[in-house]
Image 1 (cartoon, helix red, strand yellow):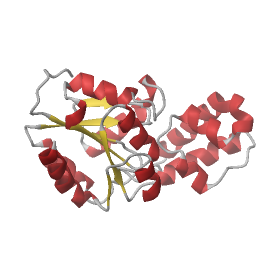
Image 2: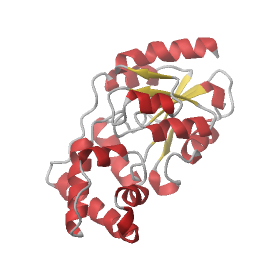
Image 3: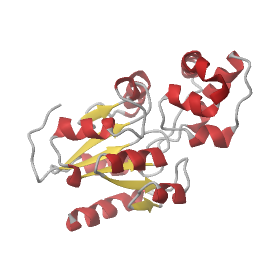
Length: 229
């Protein structure tokens, strides 16, 4: 979707895993399946959650650098395991408390556009959108299939280009340092969330303007930011 540039429009870009939905259960299970498929020891929960947000090939390079040559095979094994989990009904990613209400409240505003910038594949995101009835919610959607891995600013820059919103009027909402670094590289402010997969100090260190304690704090934080713009 393309929107004519309009200084009155604001853009709120959301990460997905660890920000809108708690997907750690199926991420950990899918990673375990990928490593078992290649007789590799899993690096463990903390290491795996630390790379959530990166594209899968980049994630595997960081997790098992000695086996970087297997990154494409590991990526496919992860996807196969995840699809098996989803087919069996075991890959459920619940929304974080307050997410649905805040999204609905922002969606009805004439001056706010919503976007997504995620390390998920388009297929994975489409499933999540269908499950939650978000088909008309987001005006710009960027996924790992079409961009370099975070923290490269490509996803955010494309969100800005597709909506016509200036960087000063946009904000990235995410749970990882990769999200905050991506936002900073694109000239966009970043709000970290305190319920995701990276600790608060990592978010602040990566450039987060603030770290939100819960979803209920987001509307007020946005209002304060836009008053100061």
